[in-house]
Structures are given as C-alpha cells and as structure tokens.
Image: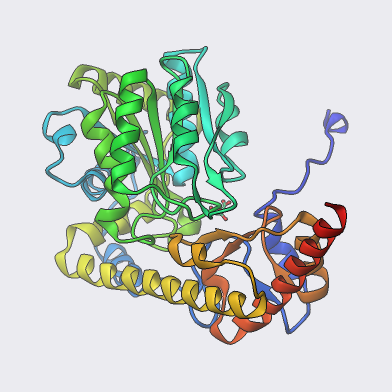
Length: 407
Ligand code: LMR
C-alpha cells in the first residue's frame, strides 16, 4: 500500500530545524523557525512556567479524561486574556472557548466547523501568509484564495487594496486575519484600520477568522488583542484561534484554543457542541499539561505578574534588535530604506531577497531563513547583527545590479 506514496516536499519552515542542526559551521545563524531565542540564541523555559509546572505537579491529583473541550479553567482564562474579562461577547454569552492542540489545532477545528456549517464555504488569506495556513485550512475542505496585503515597497500594509478586494467577496466568505505580529511580514494594522476593516466586513457580511499566535510580542497584551476585540464587538460572528506556543514558550506542549463568537447564546452553544464532536472525531481531546500550566499562571496574580514581565522582556529585546538591524542594514546598504523593520511588529520581518539569495546565504554564510526571505528577529544575537547585515547587503546589492542590467 505504501508503495503508492511519494515523498512529500520538505516543510518550508520545519525543514530548517534539521538543516540548521546538521550544519557544523561555527558561523551559523538561525533566523528560521518561529521560536523566541534569548541573547544566547536559546529557547529557554520561562521561569513562570517552571514554577507553575512545579505547583501543578505537586497539586494535581488525577489525570482522568477532561473531555473534548479540554481544560475549562484554561478556556475561561484564555478567553479573558484575549477578549478582556468584561468584553460584551463574554457578558452576553455569545462567546465559547474550546481548548485545542496548539494554534494549528485551533485553526483546523475552526476550519472543520466552518465546513460543517457550510460545505461550500470559501476562505481568503493575506498575500503572503504563514506557509502552513493554506495546507492546514484547505485540508478541512475550504476553498482558499488570497487578498492583497503586504506592500514590499513600504514594508507596510496595502490597506486600500486589501479593502477593495474584501469589498468584492461574496457574503459569507471567511477572512483569515493575523491578530497581531503578521507572519511572515511583521506588517500590522493600526487600531483605526481594524475599525475600518470591521465596518467593511460587517457591510459585506464577511466572517473574520483571526489567528492570534503572538499576543504580547507586538505592542503589549491588550494592544495585540485590539483587533480581535474590535471585531468581536462589531460583528455577529467571529472565530479566534489562539496559540500559547510563543507567549508562554510552550511550543512542544501544544496549547491553544478556539474562541467562537456567535450571534446569540444558542448559536454559541451549538458551535461549541459541534467543536466537541469534531475534536472527538480527530483526536478525542486535547493534551492537558500545558493548558493546566497556563491556567495556573493566569489564575494566580503573582504568577501572572511575573509572566507579564517575562513577556515584556522578550518584546523589548525584539524591539531593540529591530532597531539594531535597521541601523546595520542602512550602513551596509547605502541608498536603501530599512525603517520598516523598526515599524514592523513581532517575531518576523521579510527581507526583499530572491530565493537564490536565501539559498546562497544558507550555503555560503550559514544564515538560515525561510525561503520567502522571512527572518526570525529574535534569532539575531547582537554580536552577529553586522555579519548578517553585510551578508544580506551583498545579496541585495547583487540583485540591484542584476535588475539594473536587465532593466
Ligand atoms: C513559524 O511560523 O515558524 C512557527 O509558527 C512554527 C511553525 O509551525 O511553522
């Protein structure tokens, strides 16, 4: 039977983990997979996670099943973290949360729910979007198209073109949005733009599906949730896929949640019950350990304050690295503008380098980034920024000369 299987192409992001590990060079720099790295380029376990985990180990008296919706304490705490405990959708019983195996699991059960509600549903994603969005969401049977998003000339969002495209979508189309820290570009919407977007979605009767995987790593916990909160206030139906991988550093524990905001509490209950069925049909129920850690952190004022501090430190370090990279690239590549790297938010920015340059940087300079030029800013150790900037500048200058000759 397995003889009929071809070898699939390597995952464009996860493939970088092994490639980097197998590179013996002492020069190597890992700007690949989206995990936060500290100044030593290490992804450590947060102190708050260690302490909460210890408490969990001491206190937990059963590992009996919890059910397809997972850990209810976690669900309640995460909904409050994302929407704000006093949000009208929570107060009015329009919001329901189910735990899922990571942000990917949340996206997938959300897509399954959409497909179950409307087998003809189509979904639009930003151009570009995270490399796994299309495989993950189309596996649930959704038709996927793109809307314009990133403006490579300004490093910002082509907001008017984005709205024009959304204005031409059929009612009921699902619009996938990055809540904050757009992956792969780092180009985010302002609060005013979220409001404008909400009005267009509402007028066209489009349904937002927000992927919120980096809350707290952009401008702050509340600031990064502003888009999801605005949409949940102004629109009758919203889905929000939440990941705790980055903000709690719980990557391998697979902790996530899907928040569904519905028109009324009957619909919300129906959506949650159907999500339970969907989960039962795929993985039965999500793993508890990571979610139980998050619940303990968010329920305990001391842990919560300590975690917020750790998160701020990560965010501030990323901000500092953005400034330093902008400066180094400006020096290494005169006549080119890099200020957008400072304006962008979260773990990623996208360098305007061709795939051949990405390949050469990897082979000759041992600098690893995704094939589309996406770099994980936190992977830049301070003492290596000049090395990276000069290597990237060489590629950008070569590209520029080639374009000049061709053009
Ligand atoms: C990334 O974008 O690098 C991370 O979210 C890891 C992944 O699963 O792709």
